Image 1 (cartoon, rainbow, N blue to C red):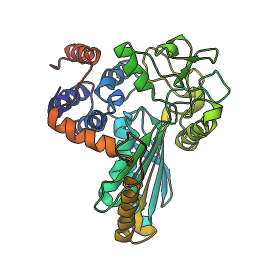
Image 2: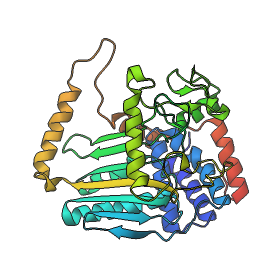
Image 3: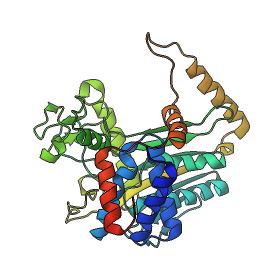
Image 4: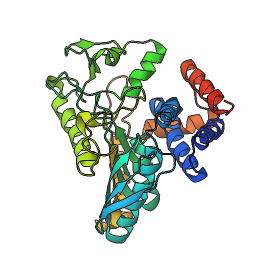
Length: 355
């Protein structure tokens, strides 16, 4: 187990060593470590070396000039100047929240960015201002649409955060694929098989081989197959791709640059970098905030009291497992798999930061 502060200090020093300002290094570290705290180990420090390799390949700008290239009172398009998505997305969310403060809602599309960590972090920023937050991003094409064998979409997550009064907030954060690629990476590190329904071979057959992507396979949309609603997962992923990239001027579909540095971006880009879409809604733009939050408390409480299946303890509200895990890991520390420990130690040695 590693104390949160230990991992925070190490990660911040790594970002400083690749040229980030202190402010940006602090912000990027906060976003990245939030994933580890919430138990989403696939998107935390395990990805730190991936960001560094992208920087080494000249694909991440550690000191971006983030700019608004188009706007109305309630909308904006932001150019991330090739910066870390961990920095670009929070800055864009700040713009969305400011617009919501002014006119009730704010919507920001982002182009020319990179991987932004967990979508939930960005959506949850709105909770601090009594707003509903939304965040989504497109990603490297690893998911095959229903009926296809070709990778056309990313795992394209969606997050929505809704404040309550006495109850903890509702926080939904999920990939539109059957599983995020990071979960496959964890299985690979553990040398374990993948559940059927997560991935298919290059020929479109079901497989439990967690390394299948390296052999030309593809992740499956949420629902896994047509019988179980994969067309709905495909549609959700497509919506994220359109909102994040077609709307902003980022790359979309199979043109999205890969996260791994050893694969070159497509030679025929249709946009700039990776795209995000962020939104904030002031509750009192719709009804009195106190009234709404009281009803959110009632909504949450009624679901918690719902009858449960035999052997189950209770119905969970989206955000419950992550909130519980955060409390545990702040107290007991964050576990790292041996391959991640080794990777971070080597990264620290290369950049002169003791792990």
